[in-house]
Each structure stands twice: as C-alpha cells, then as structure tokens.
Image 1: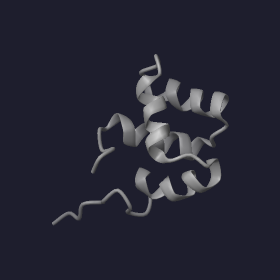
Image 2: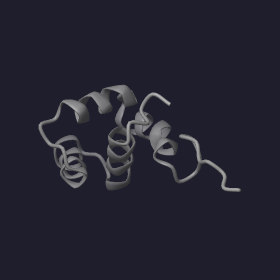
Image 3: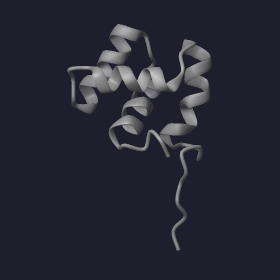
Image 4: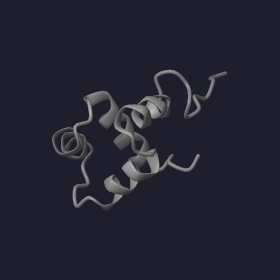
Length: 75
C-alpha cells in the first residue's frame, strides 16, 4: 500500500511554504494569485519569472508553481 504525501510532507511543495512566507514576507495566497494572474502559463516560464522579477530562489519558485498548477492550492 502506498502512502499519500500531504501538502506538509517533507519534500512536497507545501513543505516549503513556511520558509517562503518567512523569507519573502508575503502569504502563500499572494504568491499563488500572482502566478494565476500572470500571462505566463508554462511551469519553467513561471519559475524563471518568480526568480527574476520577485527574487525567489529556484526551490521556492518551483514549489509555488508546482503546487499552484496542480490545483492543490486549497487542499
């Protein structure tokens, strides 16, 4: 039987959220709104945009984009 990883499981995108909020001083909901309202749609483009325009590190940007694009935002 496989175990299901929840949003706070180590290594899951959601596990980065506390450190993202602490480091960048913005709630996760704000980051997700930025991602959803961006004209960009591809994962890599969004990650690169968050890094260049908003100063996020690669891991944090990747976690936010992955979690937002998979629709797990409210789970």
